[in-house]
Length: 147
Image (cartoon, rainbow, N blue to C red; front, side):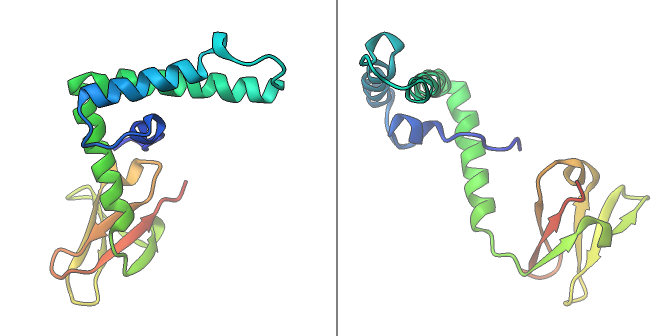
């Protein structure tokens, strides 16, 4: 999963349960609020930049959430991100401390129960840390990437 950069629902002040009509109303209100032509005179350069960035974010949020396919994709990414955030982690391990299994092309680490934690090669190559579950018990570890 790509890093979840922005929560488009939060930007619109919306919830994943909002229908398209509700999203559109929130989008229209915010796009008018932040539109560059609607800004009050006398704003500092920094405030103008913040307003412009908010306008761009609101527009992008609408583009993602108004399209059924891109919204589904975003909802899946959001759910995966939320699950990863709340996953209980029993230990942190550096990738370099794991054993490389060239036959299966994955990293492994022994669990205290006698089972193993397995991290696929492509998951290990991602920039972000990974949470890996034991193949035997309910324990999990967070694998810190070396990069």
